[in-house]
Image (cartoon, rainbow, N blue to C red; front, side, top):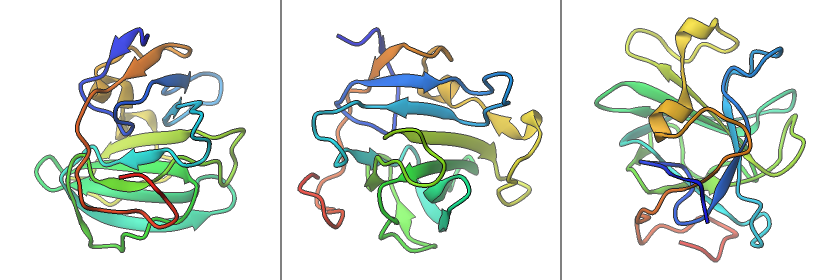
Length: 172
């Protein structure tokens, strides 16, 4: 049984663990790392937490691996999901909605195991700023409605969007 219920999360109806805190010291970890440790292995769907569009769909072999950046059309908040198993099949400019599957949890790039790395920035006045100062980022744990504490277990009991399939996946 999960210790916390999230108000929203990139995993739906599956328990996950915070494996690294946002702005964890001494490395100034710019994201929140979460992992499902699921018996489904490398086939756990990752869902959008915003209504907007894909603004980046790329691969970074030195860090993020397969990653996407989504931008909410109302708040202009940007969401970066890194270490996805595969490149998302959603092209830059694709419209997305909350609960829409955008990828699969993975361990690409500089990663020590299957998990999802989540970063957030306000993109109202600029594009995504890589390796920026702390003041540019927002705490994903606050957005999820959970404590920024490694080791806690969380669940978000939501409803994924139906009718959209990710390639190589039997889910959704």
